[in-house]
Length: 145
Image (tube, rainbow, N blue to C red; front, side, top):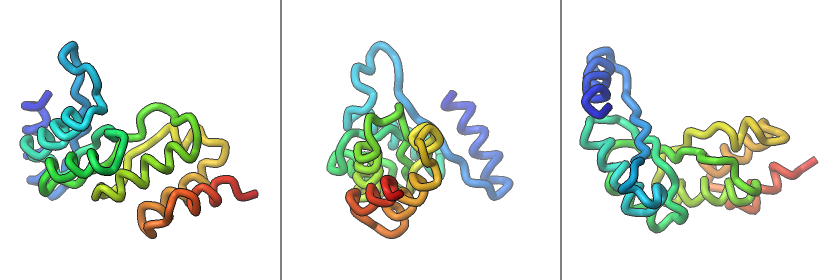
């Protein structure tokens, strides 16, 4: 898959299109796919294969995710959404942690589209990502009537 991605990114770059790699290490040797070491390895692998951006799992806190962002070098880092978070606050806290660590943004699905009000959740995410709002402020946007 890595060789195939290398060919794809070369073609993309010839056309002036950025290439993003979704890197999720798996297999018997991977005991915890959100450990700081594994997530940082994923970010670095994306850089090494020529990705302009990498979509990686969140490591659980901004300090360890900052390590992954640093490992990505010049590649932009996007946090993947992962499984549906148990609460809106949990999800928004993950997003805030990723952004505080230096992520460029996020690439999520179910935590927005399966929300009871996807538009409110999208607006709350916008406030965290682009305006640096705190979780409690964004959470108020989601629960506002």
